[in-house]
Image 1 (cartoon, rainbow, N blue to C red):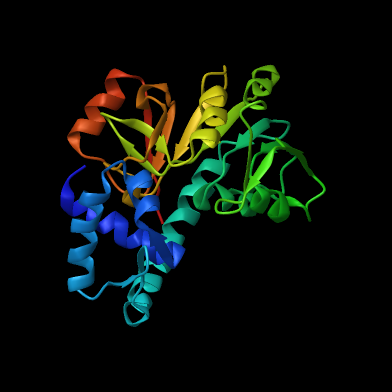
Image 2: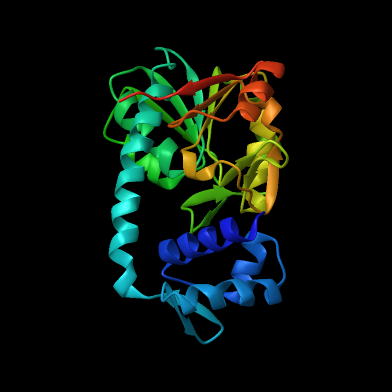
Length: 252
């Protein structure tokens, strides 16, 4: 990962989580604590974050601009989710992965007759009012940070499901590192689901491209549809063509 991109991601990670320890940042970004110290020194100097015991925290004076940017991203995520939901047909059995973009799909599925299997508590709560949406929870341990259920022992149980389509999220996507996630336990479930016979839809906004997290749960070539909000550069277009991936760019 390029240093400047990593520093930007560290800033966004800290802004989203309010604070972060050096150990957390080292694990999430896959670099040494010495490297993390150098990176956050730059953010501290720029006034973006402030040093606290064991790590860093938000400089609240800078939080407003981040929230404005997050709101803009939210609009793009809704467009991606709507585009993905258009592929869902009445009677489908689908898996919806844990993620802020995939969560937005429920708004656009509420009038369809669909069975949803998910590992995410927010998706269950969002879908609960709509009786036409049948819900199956994966169960397991609830990870409070992501509001996702995960379990090493439950991952293999997904092999019995015959999904029509699966809608996946990612912390970062690149041609070299594939589709990645920060949680090793959650990644095991994702890996099992992607390797089934269903069409795989990957929902990512442009901020996730050319980035990667700790664990690769599938290669980019395993994706059937890549839905995003910005035109991809020539390297992605060539890769998609070579690997029969349909690139779908949302339109307002």
